[in-house]
Length: 120
Image (cartoon, rainbow, N blue to C red):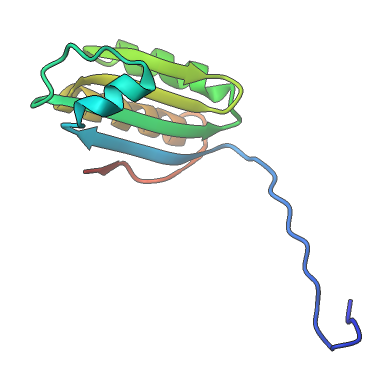
């Protein structure tokens, strides 16, 4: 509605849908990141990677975790069914494959809106 100054007030609400909003691979992360996340710091950092995803509805993180660990030699560092966050670790190629397989399954089979897998 218009107020006295002729401006329109807009109220926005977010309704969580079926989507993956973050799918990122961190190649060769610094050891301090493992420590701060409570992950196993005794890894070969030169060839290691972290994969992080955020999914809604948040319970989908359980499905994503299952797909990821079955896709290759990755370790499930964290999965939260309340926030939809998943973190995996492993070799760069394995983490990239796992994150990609999760995104493809959610898009192709479950009909989720997905983001592209990013890597740095």
